Amino acid sequence: MSTAELTLTERPGKDAACCAPLVREGIRPAAAADLARTFKALGDPARVQLLSLVAAHEGAEACVCDLTEPVGLAQPTVSHHLKILVDAGLLTREKRGRWAYYAVVPGALDRLGALLTESTVP
Amino acid sequence: MSTAELTLTERPGKDAACCAPLVREGIRPAAAADLARTFKALGDPARVQLLSLVAAHEGAEACVCDLTEPVGLAQPTVSHHLKILVDAGLLTREKRGRWAYYAVVPGALDRLGALLTESTVP
DNA sequence: TGCATCCATCGACCACCTTCGATCAAAGGG
DNA sequence: CCCTTTGATCGAAGGTGGTCGATGGATGCA
Image 1 (cartoon, rainbow over the protein chains, first blue to last red):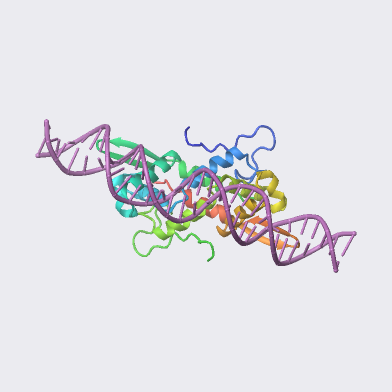
Image 2 (tube, each protein chain N blue to C red):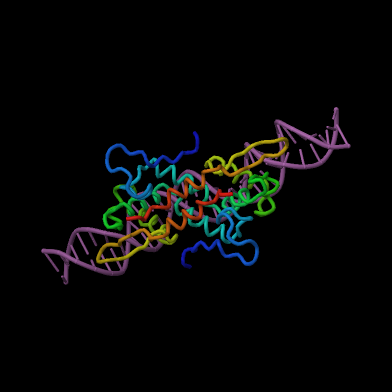
């Protein structure tokens, strides 16, 4: 699968564009599961820190060896968390030479943020 | 405690306002933990659906008996999830008469969304 | 060719989380 | 005053998730 895609706007008939993605008449269970899968990826301190480290790193990318020491976790653990972030569609992985470079997916955080914002307008 | 508060902007010297909360030079571990705690609360399909149901309900509030059937879970399970959302600062609980009314905390989702948006500006 | 480095995978361990039935306290109606 | 309703809590069962050491594949350097 290609990491959810967060399709919350597709609704057949009913109302059109009202207020927000989350604030509808109940959100379809499948869409809720997709959303929850993304949030779960961000539901660990180490992963939030890793995401921040990658984004703030020079060139907006970082390899595992750059991240292991700042988060204070063993290398296998860091690799594990990075894989989860990649599977969630928040990071990309590119292998160059001996290193694996991780970078933040351009619009990922913005799209997720947009799903939460503009939720409480009358 | 009063549910984190998500104070990510407080930094002593260094740079001032640059691009975004998440995208800094590394986010302090404590702040990462706070953020992760909130995301973890949203990391379950049932809770995302419950949040949506409450927000979309008439009057922007709902009692447990309104939510049990739509999510297809037992009443103790729904109460459990609602408690987690309240502890995360996303819902409020007010007991009126025999019922407990849950409502979305006004700016909660917007504040969380703002932390994710505006993250990838050069 | 031999060796060091980087990193993903594996296996195991422990903790936590989700879910439910049973139970109990509080409130209201007859 | 008893009985029903609402919902929180408890305890148990099963599943999931985080962490690490050990291992192995791939790459580059000497």
